[in-house]
Length: 316
Image 1 (cartoon, rainbow, N blue to C red):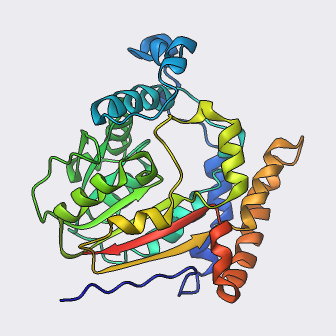
Image 2: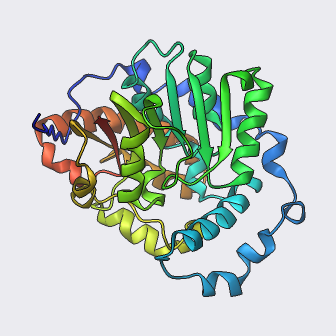
């Protein structure tokens, strides 16, 4: 049976204002204090002094061809990231990618009850929690043991831990059986992985007809490339934004692939986070610009190459 490719530069659906951006909810999230487990003192987290020392960063400031070394560096870096409070850039406090998460969830459908879902890169556990809250049976993993601990704490507090299995694992070497999952979900995770190996493993663990939904930053935005070049402290040398052309070479065996580009003009709103007294306006400005983006990307789909993020939909 021939493989059919569906490539889309813009969304084929209209996103409702409520679905695409809940401003009130986002402002509450931004003002809420982080849980206590995200504020662990640096000295309480094993191996993290080594991870963040200048000597370590200089020694590891190059991509790794060996998967074991790559996983080691990713684990050390993200153990530190998830153990420390406010370890990211200033604009992340405005949760600029939360509207993308809301849109990504629309692609999963309304009925997740008892669906078997694998989550790539569980991080702080907020995606895991939402999937479990909607009735899914979630198998979540992360290369970072700190992320796994964080996610378990979040699920335990929400009385959802019994619905989930959370493990330390790399996306290129999954421990799950073949044809195990109805859905795969990941937020800003594929660009951390050896994509060809990860896609092969994704095909293996998805059931026939199973779908995968990912939201990923794009490599084709020159402003984002410049920002990443100026801020190497926020990522490992193996991490690189997603190149859709390169990704397509690893899609053999998938029956369908489409992508829906996001945050074109809207990404400029994050600049307000660096101006005195204007950070609180960033979510509202972003919301307005996202509506402009939706129109612009429908009229000029090729403009999606300048977007910050894209939602990927794959089907086995």
